[in-house]
Amino acid sequence: MARSGSAGAGGTGTGTQSVERALSLLSYFSDEQPERRIAELVELTGLGQSTVSRLVAALETLGYLVRDERSGLHRIGPKVVELAGVALNQSPVHRAARQVAQNLAHELGLGANVAERHGDSMFYLCHFEGPQAPRAFTLTGRSAPLHSTAMGKALLSGLGEEQVHEVMGAAYPAYTPHTVTDFDGLLKALEEVRARGYATEVEELAFGRACLAAPVRDRSGAVVAAVSVSGSLSAMDLPGRQDELAAKVIEAADLISTSLGFMAHATPLS
Image (tube, rainbow, N blue to C red; front, side, top):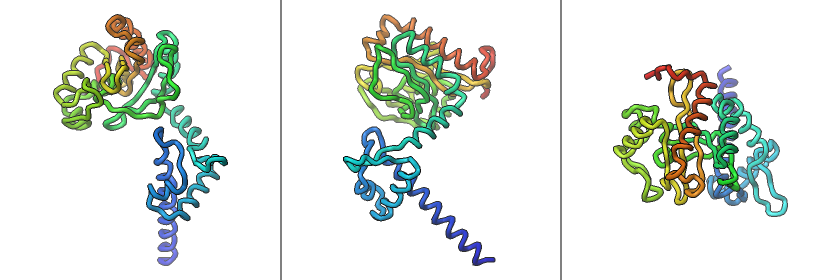
């Protein structure tokens, strides 16, 4: 009996290691490097070529990777997209926000985005382009920093000072000269968000871009997501349109919050 258990444990360990290695290969595909050769994966992982080839072949068979016959390069396959769709469709925030965000993009002609916080970064749940803010790629599934984005500040606005420090620490990287890089500056920005009910971002993450976001709350009153409109500085025209855009985005946030069970008179749980 003891020998049988030992063999089973060994088999499980080997199987688990193979799964971990196979999944780790997928992490080396990114927007910057969407296609990889097996030789690259060998170098990146430190695994033997026969091991990588075997794992890649298994991932191809299952649909997680696809090989271009002409170039020999591998890219992410349709099975990953299918699973991503399953995950999004199970998200209450995504279900409540998708149509609202789509309507917002159509009405204002700007990009409309919905994101939630994952640790010290935000994760885009959905994104729609407007004619004044076209993109050749989707933001859905991407992450971005909290301190340098309007959506990030809207997400952080539901946290107390100690919680913000626990999540963010005391200093943050600068992406432009306009980025807030210290804790006191971030707290001041969050106080402004709470007072106005929305957050703004003007060239804090990237030059030539602006964003306006409002927090989304769940049944308990906790901030669980943020919705925003974004685009170029000229398309957003915050000096001339800020009040108009803020009213629209706050209205969208309220619609999503209501769908999640939030009531305006509810007191957020501490």
